[in-house]
Image 1 (cartoon, rainbow, N blue to C red):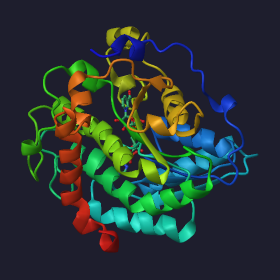
Image 2 (image 1 turned 90 degrees about the vertical axis):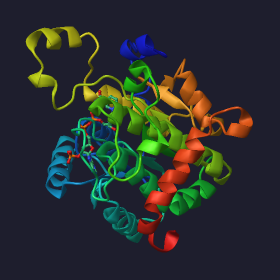
Image 3 (image 1 turned 30 degrees about the vertical axis):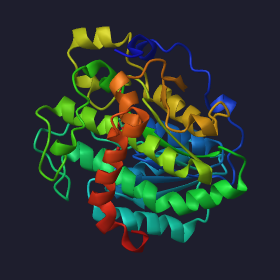
Length: 329
Ligand SMILES: NC(=O)c1ccc[n+]([C@@H]2O[C@H](COP(=O)([O-])OP(=O)(O)OC[C@H]3O[C@@H](n4cnc5c(N)ncnc54)[C@H](OP(=O)(O)O)[C@@H]3O)[C@@H](O)[C@H]2O)c1
């Protein structure tokens, strides 16, 4: 139950829009920035003058979000742009990265925020992987790989630890109990766990394994990779909850902007150092006090006394995405 109370009762946010300086000249990507936490994060970055790319799957929803954000911040000197990205279809990732690189020569922070949580058991990505795993892990793995050169290039000229990639874990994994749900034997095309929750949990575990492995491989290049659980937040289904559940939930469910504060801390706070690569933050921006023992073991190689799960997971992601990486493969 690692740190569950700390996640449910996180107190007052200590790193908000009031704590960040002008972001003019900085360039960001937020996947899934048209809705929920991502939308709130984009709003903050744009209000401070950043150039923000919303990478998401529905051009209409992205256009609506851009219009709404622009009209709520008419004075901003920022720029808002869209990138077409369907994380559940690996053929869209290279065109997305290419479109970004045609417009920008720097990338300060990539927030791998998008995610699906409730795809029915048996749902598959375009390439036939379990839908949560395909979208939340394989899609973000490939996007991050393709953007690594520009991240590394940006890191070379900026202060230490200011170029970052923020993945999105979920506190649900901490309360799930049982096995981690990332069984490599179960991950092949068309394979999946037996419940929606386990499939989602497996993908969210993957969203911690990946930044840990990216950190091991690319810390020396100056990029900081972390993950975070944004919090227990109102989402699209909240209003449909029964009255009694809604009343109870009010004590533990927060507005999406609070989740944006967790993501903001990971991406921009000077509290986050190069040595923090591979760590997980909890609401509203502090390190996880008591991660699951099996996750910590999974992050370590077998020769370090761990289970080597993260390294195996990395290999699996690499194997399953390399044919969609173009010349970068
Ligand atoms: N809300 C919570 O309490 C909570 C708790 C823990 C973790 N999280 C994680 O936090 C992140 C944001 O959650 P949220 O509550 O803000 O969710 P949300 O409101 O449902 O937003 C998810 C975003 O991801 C996009 N997306 C989904 N599938 C995609 C795909 N195949 N390709 C590209 N974009 C895709 C969605 O686009 P559409 O609008 O087109 O669907 C949307 O913009 C997720 O990773 C979630 O797992 C949330």
